[in-house]
Image (tube, rainbow, N blue to C red):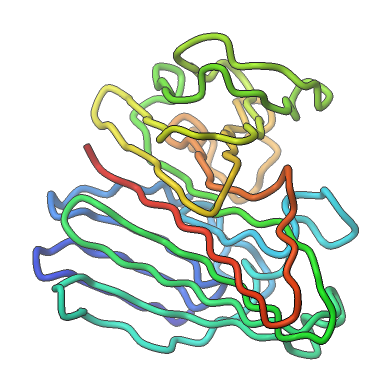
Length: 271
């Protein structure tokens, strides 16, 4: 698959595949990898890459009539530009527009752009969607970020206290996060609605802050040992070294009138 590497003047770097505009690696200026990528990930046409940052669009999961997580993550994107900016950031812009293949799944005219910029200890990703159709449409979206962790069983997530969520691993029950910290125990699959504060993920080796604008929700996911065993593109111990914390727009689908644009941004900061 065609890969794109962008490097900032301070050495911070990101790797992407044009397949899905998929970020597969992020190393801040300090040099260590911060994203999880499965050793068994399928790098094949029509297949999603397990790890990194898959782009979920125009449908989250199976919450609608389209194929799970939509088509953006398994479609080839065009590289518009890639390199350093005047501010010495590494930056890439990729674009996806409607084709007969996307219209066969979701019959709308659109243009989606994905801007990835890296510098210092931060990675910023911005997904933008323009309605190029003659009629309005709605969609849901997420940046399905796989954070690399030392051991998910001793990882804690902060910033979600007092937030309502849908527990997909417990029959889609609606609950509220009462505790200040969340520590994964077994399968974890939650959609947190109307998240207002930055989220912080801590393990024995690293701390990562997840901030977002435009996105209203956040997904926290880990398959746990039992479900992970059924995922053929995930190595047996892979679930221990990853935790997905995703900026998302799910609870209130994005509604765009013709010629209207929406942008959602997620910033990862290595603390």
